Image (cartoon, helix red, strand yellow):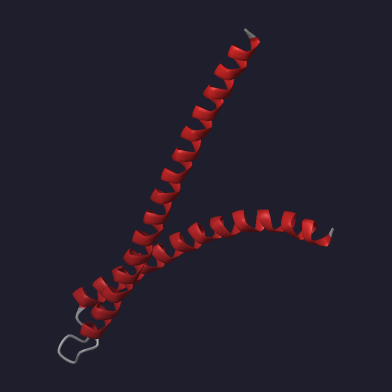
Length: 109
């Protein structure tokens, strides 16, 4: 009877561990996809800002208040995206740094 109970517990444990590994892989895939989209979004915002700046600096449009406000707004959005990206990357670096000291201790042994 104890062998059957151990087998059931082992089977449930393997099933639960398999589900947790599958879930972790799915989360990592979503995270990496999000990171790719975020990088592309920041690049597109920078391109947009560059384009508006180029139009604003044309002789024909120089000094136009609407374009000036649009340029200011796009710069603000770009800064916000960069700040988000910095915070996002800092969190990743902190996680990596937390793992690093453990490796350094192991290497010193």
